[in-house]
Length: 135
Image (tube, rainbow, N blue to C red; front, side, top):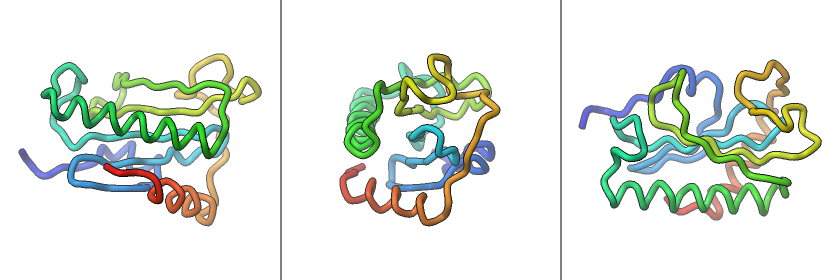
């Protein structure tokens, strides 16, 4: 497989929270909702294309990140999606949603409302996530 390169749109819009041989975990730079993105290091673009081992690892990581969001941010609902209409690189959004958030009940992507994280807050989330995440 060729050297992994993160899509520039994800790189520009997110903080890198964690990296392993198989994955990157990103935090969308929008503090209005806890919005994490799991990026498998693969050239595949669709979940069904993953071999059984990688598929299991992706879903295990989604479960870990989902639990972290639930424990840390106490959302009303979790949204998990792998759409890729604009960024074709495989990536899975894991978003904590609140009935009171500015996007509710619609989707978070494409919204114009945004509040960026301070470097301190992004680092606090990074430390907390990495204390529980096993990729």
